[in-house]
Length: 362
Ligand code: GN1
Ligand code: MG
Image (cartoon, rainbow, N blue to C red; front, side, top):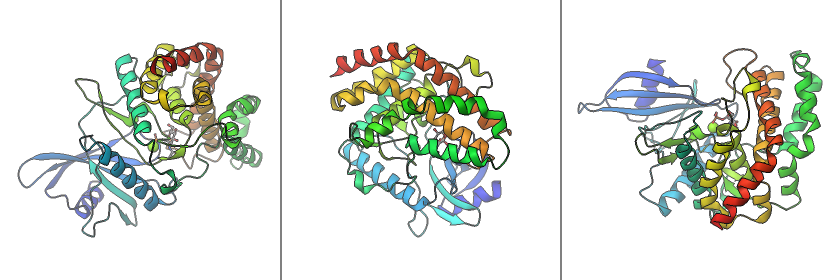
């Protein structure tokens, strides 16, 4: 691997000697490495090298194009803001494509990041970061963005795909997941509410991040303030609930999304409240009543949507999400289902919290 990383770094004109590297395990899609260089001037410097998953992102050039446009737009509004900067090759291109894949290299930002935290200050700051991100892109012309993964958050389509694959059952996995399938089918209409409301023009399309896990925010180690929102691969037109809901189903779960003890999953209401506080501080003024009214539900919607995606991937033999063991996607499915069930029983409390903060910041 070291040799490959060296070769990629040379292509991006990084001078000096590669001293060491480590794989960063946080994402489920791309391969990410931190590489540590000793530059010719004797200074140690680290960079991030990433191999984009081209099974997931069929058109990686469009992904890079979106990132360029969005980061340039944000930079034009706030030049001092920390953001990822992709290095260019000799030919001035921000990626290389070779027999091993599609590679890019960006600056390493010293920071803290969290998969699970109950530190409410961190969570509130994370909510602010995603809220502010969305607000800054409020006037970005959405038609300039490529749709890099069509129907990414089309929950009805996710269900249809699951149903089709479960019927075909190509790997004989469905027998392990009968109860999960039945439960998912039983909540289909509730889970598809955002998609249906969008189709009925009851929810507006915005430019959204679409992958708002709290580990996609980098935090200052000392002040705990958010430094940067990262992983812009899925920035596309979407609904506000996609960003709010995805963040909630990840950060406001008592356990990590692949916890084997699904019964421990559930919605952590103080974390929900802290995130809602931060997010609404930036967005409340621009949201429609329908958007506010469906925010609490969006956590449930995204937990179920992820469950359908994890289960579908399990049924297909896990070609999409990275897995560490054969049942990994089934474990993830069960954890999301347990979380979603718990969210249903706390829906009224979540709705009340949203109401309070929406009013506070309107
Ligand atoms: C993937 O790789 P990562 O962590 O950025 C996935 C998200 C899922 C998430 C679940 C392009 O995100 O949609 O919510 O895993 N990204 C893509 O952990 O499918
Ligand atoms: Mg991602």
